[in-house]
Image (tube, rainbow, N blue to C red; front, side, top):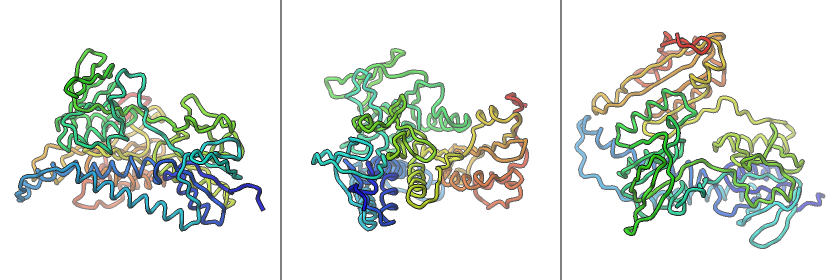
Length: 462
């Protein structure tokens, strides 16, 4: 009989922690999981899920407009922020209930408290002060929004956390940042009728994405009426006597808005976790350092998900947790595979992408082919909407493998998921070419681009 209280103690009730706890408990192990806020973590409670619900809500104005071209007459449209918030809260509560039920059914003990490490095998439950022991400890506490505390007036601003709990919808908003969160919320708020400005220090939004995706989305957002300010940052935020906000930028522009949102990255949620007491090593950003099997430098302590700052995506945390269980409890050493991860930006239009951008492929391979199509989707022909889809395939000319696929347009995320399988399987351009098109669809362009738009040899476009 083990001298420990538990075989596994999981700190953090997000997607990764819950999956590890549920699977391990299902194997008959003694498992406890501690969560200080709500089960489901960032993704379910104040991240991916509520964000996607907000995305759906923000798309209806365009859909109402488009319907006229198809013979529909739609009456006066009214939006009720409170109704959306209540509906969102009901769905989040339902999902949290499913997470709890899954843990309960598997036999895991749920502890509604903050937990902090006190040693290689010990954890203190903050609410009660009780210290418990475990043979293995898994840290899955995720990340938290960077409050940008060095910014004068940051206390007047919100992050994505507060955006999901606003009592009223602002008339105007300034969003700082150029990544996923900033871009998605800019489109959400604009779609809900908010005058929206996005400010970003870089040359282009979404700096890590293929340049055609970045530029195409930038142009589409500005065409909708979203103002985008590049190569500038907020230097100070002050509140006016009337209750509004004034944001002063580096280039001395003053922007008056109802709300300022900071979407300036997320940090590993390791502050005050007791890592020092347990001897767990972290990097310069405070992220827990792990090996290929999610092991820290302390033999009994493991970490998965955003707290390791590898790939900040919910499916990655879940995959890492499943690999942890396979390795530690099923005798099947399995390392998480972080290669060729498909992802989507739920902007409007969407971006779906997997593999290398054109820029990165040109650095890696001496000779690449770029297949590019830009076209008006069929739905826009009757609606009259001036929008364009962009599809790109990046091919390594040396072995003909498709090493990158990028889509800007409706349902790009759905297509990226399927393209992820294709690229993971190592398909060549000839595999795409001999695949029959599904007509009429936008996705058929992926299998009908027979001639390269251009080539890049040794970094030079030819």
